[in-house]
Length: 425
Image (cartoon, rainbow, N blue to C red; front, top):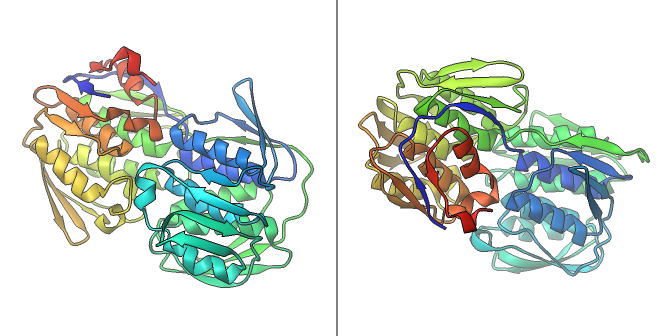
């Protein structure tokens, strides 16, 4: 699908999309719950739909009623294979949960997920009594449990998502206190979100300064649990940058007290001197005299794409730390951002763990490619709003992974966006 973004001045009020990080964790918790879970404000991105499909195949029943999800617990797999689509969190979180079953299960994915490293399971699963047949550290993998929770030490340097999966699986299966020790944990705010969801569902996990986690046995809870999915700071980061670049807008539905890592976009906007007003129920953002900034995105690597779009319009050279976290995303995002923004005459230099973006020289509309990466497509669209000439995005449907309403939300904010009608999601 090809989408064209025309230079535009934007304005208006928009509701933030739902958080797929929150939604997927809620699905996992609902699968493991002792009674029915009612999820309000459920997401509908590809990753969210994949999570719903996975929990159904692992034994949960799912009903949509009055725009709520009603999920009855499972963990007795009714299918021999689960497919997590392209959801990195999904594969890493649901694999340990699937291993609670005693029957063999094949775990698969699609697209870029097939090339992302899964060696973690080869190293850790045998320690937990799980048989595993892997594909050289890649998908598909075959596992057979049941998982036996034991005191273990894991490497947290690649992704915190592996730890999230183990915390859920241990929480469900532990019959005595058990500890997971973690070396060099990255993306700590995402673990905060995991622990927040687990606490809501009645789990008792003690966080020892992110170096170890003590999981206590969970008492049975026969009462229904209600959970409301948060607004998504990751998707909203593009809206916020859009306002800073192309016109004052108001964004509702974000929790300013959220544990989501990408809430840090507010720090970057402040550093850039964007106009910013933060209230409990809404955030107003508008253009200012944008200046280059220095930002550490090591704990929030998903912010790189919107930050690059922001930096393109900031006077001077912006420096963003954390490039090493970008290699194993939907694309190698460091190189992809350099390539696609280079087409728009934005110079990006990669230097060890740093990304340097020369801004303030104008952005040129160009034909760019998403590389099947949702955040690349959205970053190019945001940058195109004040470019000289039109920005044409190829494989623009990549946004469906996390934010299927993105182009429609642009239109609601008065942006001129050409989307083939027959290809709307």
